Amino acid sequence: SEDDAAAPKPLTGGGGGGGGRFMTTGQMGSVMEESSRIAISVARRILSTTPPGHDADSGAVDRAVADFFDIADIHMHVPEGATPKDGPSAGVTMITALLSLATGVPCRADVAMTGEVSLTGMVLPVGGIKEKTIAARRAGVSTLVFPVGNKADFEELPDYLKDEVEVHFASHYADVQAVAFKGMTKAEGAP
Image (cartoon, rainbow, N blue to C red):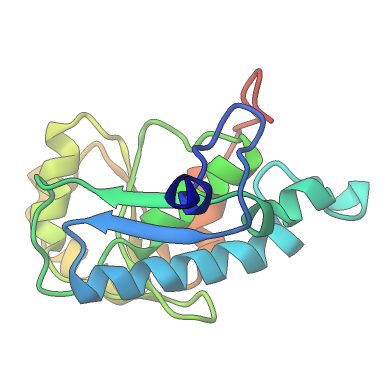
């Protein structure tokens, strides 16, 4: 049917199909919807210059990687159980997930991150640093990435919350990327 032809095609192990459409569903609200649009824009730019797993000494970026978002349909879903937010804080996480999908390079499993991102890739401060630190510790995460604008908020936390966690403060998404993908290589069988 005509509706079936217009429906986005699911991503497959080969990188998916479609025509570069980006859609969102779930409990996003207008703030997270805007964050997702900024995330895809920033991720596109990174893929064309410094994608995870790219060796700058090897020369040009792989065109298949750089063009991923122009070729594959992306569907970002935030489930109903997601915590409602007063303000944006998921931009760095969305970009990281998009870059991992496009390159086949997984993010480190021991990293938690938060921060909103501007169109130029600047990492903006967020609220709830104490709550996010507690949640990360409960989940067994050993490395945290926060916006540099939240450094004072983290430093004000009691020592028992800061002990035994490695924390990085990011001013630009490149700082997040350096931590999230450090030591990671393309997953076996990834496109």
